Length: 440
Image (cartoon, rainbow, N blue to C red; front, side):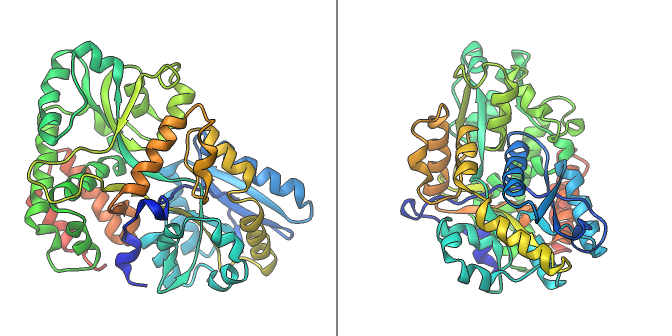
């Protein structure tokens, strides 16, 4: 499969939404995660509502399969990325490997660490046919499927606190110029314009993903993704990098953002407590803000919108970025018995009717065909339909950069993004550094 196909997913409303989200868990140690005879291991991410839903699916499987258990283990986002990389490199991966697809999955395939599931999906067409076709793009390497798509659509959107906007007498931004004009207005009122968990680095990345798209269109990052020489020096790239530093210099982000982590949900708390007016983040944060933010969500104080256009930009304003899929792979080092347990779990519990209901009940849009018909009765129906509309109407739904790129290029990217936001490098230095890892 051409690499560009799993980066840039063009969707039509009739084709359904692009999807994302899933978990994995299981103790390490020994091939297949060291779960032992009769058991498979599965690692996934912490944080509700996802963590609870993932554990519930494992519990249902274990209850129905007393002789073939799954042992789950949950990790925080950043810790997981380090842990799974080390485990796979040592041949100690869990049976079920949770990931985001894209470049990282390709690296697993190239090192023969994950099972080819193409024939299994062919033999289990009912499993595949339940899911949006577009979800398989980031699960596919060289025309072969190496992962099971799971969970929910997760575009990045611009959240805002309606109460804060009302107090300041402001309206949600409809352009980049509006964003820059709002910055001094909120600062004068003693409110940070934007919350940001900058220590996590990938949260900063979301700003560049949208600016690159809105200024130059998907083709700008696409060129870097496909290995074009000096692609990061594109004028649209330099303009996007310059604009984000202008926002930093204008005090557009909460003071001390570089020491705030996303895993702790501290960035979300700044929004729902009114200490920040806006936050650019994934739609997966809706559930945790509903759980932790008092009446912020239930009381109608949370606003949301797609990222606004940049004046003179080439990108379609309907475009979005984020996670067009998260995925479950099976370790090639697992035993035959563990592999069969994993496949049975994929067929019977991943996005089962019970799990689909749990995702919808917590404000998420599952990747299952026809799931939109179950949203009308949800207390979160307006948000669910908004997310479905963003994903299904996007001319381009781009995969998060750190997942689309190879692990080597992704780490260099995140390192340079942190420096860019800390104003310790210039846009030109950022571009030069990234040009060095094109194709690596």
